[in-house]
Image 1 (tube, rainbow, N blue to C red):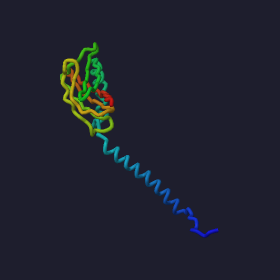
Image 2 (cartoon, helix red, strand yellow):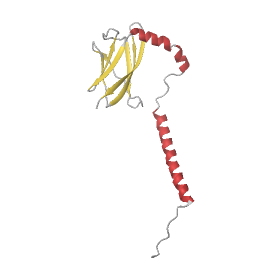
Image 3 (cartoon, one colour):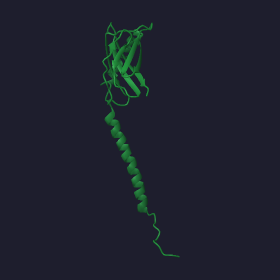
Amino acid sequence: MSEGKPARQFTGWHALMVFGGAFGIIIAVNIALAVSAVSTFPGLEVKNSYVASQSFDARRDAQEALGWSVYASAAGDQIKLEITDADGAPVEVAALSATLGRATHVKDDQTPDFRFDGKAYVAPAELSPGNWNIRMKARADDGTEFEQRVILHVAR
């Protein structure tokens, strides 16, 4: 037999290094994900949820009494927001504001300038493929507020 290098042994220090490295990677990934989650959180919806809940039922009932339905679509660099009444006729609202953005972050948020064309509200927008949310607020002629999150899917 030839004499060579002695076989290396796996010692307790080696095991400590392997376990320490594995747990170090797990902790580093958890910290990175937590920092990412906190930095992309857009913030609070309302300052006090209890106070907001006190008028929720009345606002919902008034909104449902309007009988409006909302549908969003996209074609090219245009988005269309169709608001119809209970009979399916187009509705021209007294005021409309909307934020177009992703559900997961506010980085791509846009405020489209909607114009009523007689049938629907149309606005130019920069849209990449995927799911978008339109968070709209409209006011009826009688002053009733209408709020809805409309999902818009843009195909590739």
